Amino acid sequence: MGDSIDAVLDLPSPMRTDLDFDRDGKQIGELHLPHSPHDDAWGVIPLPIAVLRNGTGPTALLVGGVHGDEYEGPIALSELVRQVDPTEMHGRLIVLPSLNAPAVKVGRRTSPIDNLNLARAFPGDPDGTPTQQIAHYVGRELLPRADFVLDLHAGGSSLGIMTAALLRHHEDPDLVARSEAALRSFGAPLALAGAPGEGRTLIATAVRLHKVAFAVELGCGGRVSPAALEIARAGLAGFLAHTGIMPGEPTPYTGPLWRIVGNDAFVYAPTAGVFEPFHMLGDDVAAGRPAGCIHDLARPAKPPTQVSFGCGGLMFACRAPGIVDHGNCLSVVATKVSST
Image (tube, rainbow, N blue to C red):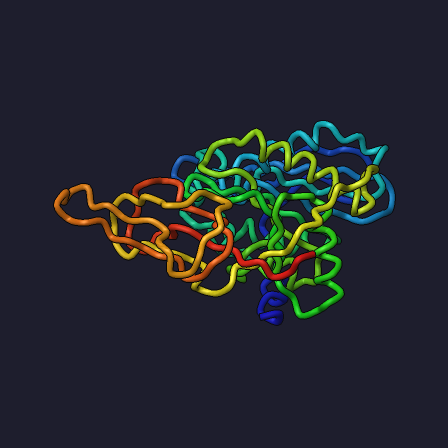
């Protein structure tokens, strides 16, 4: 996998910016992705970016808006860009508050241009669709500049999820230890280690490039959560203090680590209908116990279809819309893996 990523990221990107990544001060501008749709022969897709730098020091790449229906990250990162005085920094911030700008514009998980999910597009393709080109630029031009990478997510319009910081597994114990320390410095109310998932995400790519990297899930249901937004603000301050880029003292998460273990952690819809969950986020649940039932509202004489948990633990995520289709994720269970 590493060789294939290196081969992809060695290819030049068509994206451009007028910002100077090595200049001190605060620069706020755009990345320009050439785009030639029916109504604009030689246009560009503008993606907002800010670079804040003061002398030597580490670089943190801060990303929000990978999914367009997840709003706390873009809000918190835009506030950070406005508020930070570069003279109080030591190092550099590269901030992409709305990386998937086409999706953010319309409030969709996927891009309205190519219908791709940016969190399933890395390491990207410089000759591919706009989403693939965005992923490639981040991997080629930005990840090599970064020492720390933070990707802010939320449940979006399809998922209710507990606010948590998520760490991917890596074989290098030193990288794992440094990444866990960074994750804990964010101070999210829950921490997941060895989080499962796609190898096509920003964080998965960053980890394969040996960066200290983690993601955070904030809010849910496709709306702005004031509580989650406050966690994002405080978490950014704590994390940037941990990196040494900004002054301050983190208030780290000191609780247990959790993990999403295997397919048994997921409950999927075996049929279409309307899902009635039997539990709330954060509830303790047990293997084999009912997770909820799916009602066929077009057939009132038909009993609902019951679904059960495949493992016990903490109900970490739950389907947000009531209507479901066969194969939709209904709930996700996290299991405690350590006490400290």
